[in-house]
Amino acid sequence: MTSAWRRAWPRLRHWLYWTHRWLGIGGCLLFVMWFVSGVVMMYVGYPTLTDAERLAGLGPLRFEQATVSPAAALETLPPAARAQPPRRMVLEVQGGAAPEPVWRIVDARGGRHTVSARDGQARGPVDAAQAEAIARGFSGQPGARWAETLERDQWTVPQGLNPLRPLHRIEVGDAAGTELYVSSRNGEVVRDTTRAERFWNWLGSVPHWIYFTPLRADPPLWHDVVVWLSAACIVSAVTGIVIGILRIRLRRRFRNGAVTPYTGWMAWHHIAGLIGGFFVLTWIVSGWLSMNPNMWFERNRGDAAAAAITSYTGADASPFPWPPAQLPAGEGAAAPREALLMWFDGKPLLQLRDAQARVRVVDAATGAPAVIGRDDIVRAAARLRPGAVVTQATLQTREDFHWYGHHRERVLPVWRLEFDDAAHSWIYIDPASGQVAGSNDSNSRLRRWLFNAAHSLDFPWLIQYRPAWDVVVWLLSIIGTVASASGVVIGWRRLRRKSRAPAGPGAQRALQRS
Image (cartoon, rainbow, N blue to C red; front, side):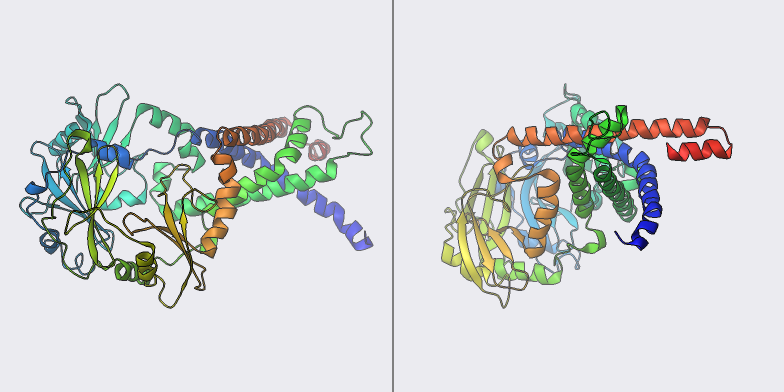
């Protein structure tokens, strides 16, 4: 150690301890909250209306009642909304006092529209009485009652619901305490929650994501709050690890034979912090990275990507044939609940899903099951990345590190096409429909390592053999909680001593040395 370093070290050590002490007092409270709420989130996710729940609530389709063609329905939209092919167009039954087939349309800009497939008129707005009737049909509960109309509440803060606001909250009146949210814009049921979900989310997702309604309603503010709180906690964790290493003695132990100079809560904090410090730091850094600070993990989602998808599908090649020919019939739960319009390489297809979310893809012109081969997909996929070449096409039948479920649905089997473009893109294609099921590039694959793997421990060899994943996450969470909770106790005691200490300079110096 040089003489300059020896002279500087006491001052550096003072600031090292000072920084860890005062950032740690608040940081350890956040760490305890994050560890405990993270365990809750392993089993109860943030409320959402899943596809299975939505399909189970829809009535069976009768195609002979849908006399308005897709092209005619699109003509009723404002000029700006129909300037480009829609992102999504689906036929389903809207419930209520007089159920009818409707076209649900998401335009290229994300706008939401509902058009009657019976008379071609736009549907909406929906008042409280109509929303109540829709919720009764959807839930099968005749006692469902309107509770309020709101812009947002704790369970509807995500920005993806903005085109559908205001929302009617309907209390279903069942044993689970279910509440449904119906859009006042077009009558869609867009969210459901249960009493148990609401309770556990106050202990899980809400504190973990700092997802409180007034803050989350302002996305830039919420983003900055989470990023800066996480950054402060990173500094607290790093300084704690450095101090822990400086104060440990594995060979030349202290007089009592211990490896730590501390006793009581300080000893717990020291040892648990050293054992779990790496995982604490990994979790907080990966959580910070999940907020995409400085926009490091941005991907191209602009007009060029949308144009490539349109070119690939051929959605603008010709009007969708209506009525479709010889559609397979079904009764009861097997009857189609929705018909999603899609194209592959200029060919119109219909994806039919029943009340149990089972999928059939048929040729809209003939009604026969769609047959799409590897060569068809590879040839059409060249339009997804103009100027690039497909270097490998693999039919993936099992989940792997980059294509896996764990809290989300994944198509299997799936074609994985690898391109030689600058981003090293991988595009996943559903072999049944030819639709793009997902994509990633070198940037998002790096984020997969830095966030999903580091934060959620989403390793295939763990998540495919639960409860192995649960045991590992529980064990690491307990270690982190002990390290953090002991820090909370230490910080609380220090603050109490400071508030009670006499004001004399000698007492202040003694307190600083403690």
